[in-house]
Amino acid sequence: MAEQWIIRVHGKEYGPADLEALQEWKADGRVLPANPARRVDLEHWQTASEIPGLFQVEAPPVQQEVRGQRSQVGDEPTSKRPSRNVLTETFRIYFRGFFQFLGLSLLSIVPIACAELTSRFIDTAPGVNVDLRTLVAGGFGVCMIVLRLILLPVYIAGIQVLSAELATGNRIGFLSVLNGAVKYWPRVAGLCIFVYAIFFFLIVFGFGLLVMAASANTVLSAVIVLGLLVLQIWLFSRFFINVLFWQQFTVLENLNAADALRESRKLARSGRDLPWYQRPLWRGAFIFSIWIAFVIAITITPQWATFRDYLQQVMQTQDPQALYEKMSAAMQTHAVDYQALALNIVQRILQPLVGIAFVVLYLDSKPDVE
Image (cartoon, rainbow, N blue to C red):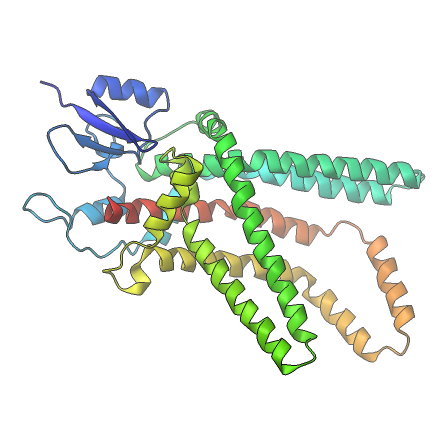
């Protein structure tokens, strides 16, 4: 008798189903490699990527290392040491699917580059009415911003789908990635609005508290403001923990918003029996910190010389009004900063590495929760 399997999707169990039925579900996009699965005669859960003959691949290296440390009695997981090759596996996946990840990156690169180049060209075009120029540039910029926001959920979901497929050794076409990503657009878009809006308000609130602390006139008011700042940092860190894996659970597990956030918090806080630097939370924070440092470096570097010159002029000038007029004129006549634009494009091309790293970390850490 053919093996029968149970598949868990969106928090619900489906089956029993044989290999032929599972292949039909896979073709319809209803089963992804990361979906939990088990044989009907076993209690142990694994992933759909391990079902023989379904994806025709071996488990990824990070998963092989995890499952290679299971005990021989009852096949129950024992305390394990997490994979140390998340970054290595991330770059392997990135280079294996480089052109597909580049295609996803173009979803953000094209609107940004078009808005930048067109606005600068219109601003410096001779013989054009100022009002018409401003109207066209503003309208085009708004359209590009809207297009960028519309494509963002497709980009996020596409990174998850493509990374999960490549992590299991499976090949998938770029159009199939887009088709699968579009299906998740409403859910991912809603969570993007919620998550990014909360982060935005927490950051704005923090800057406001810093300004208040700098302008505090009494010791008591300064202490109160600093206390609120500590509270804000605590709220920021707690929210960061809760949403660390929201993209993976939303797309790879096909969970709704509430379930995705709950499972994200559960996975982020797992691995308490491990050293702190091996837990999903700290490894995720380390990956995120590396990316933020890289973004800050390539953002500040091309503008550092200009900023330093302006700072020296501010310190030495005897006529602040003349310096202000000079800086305003320089900004108005400034052409396209091709270096900054090129670095921005490089950042967008490399940005999938962050999504891939979190997918690999998710696959590596999830057996702890299962």
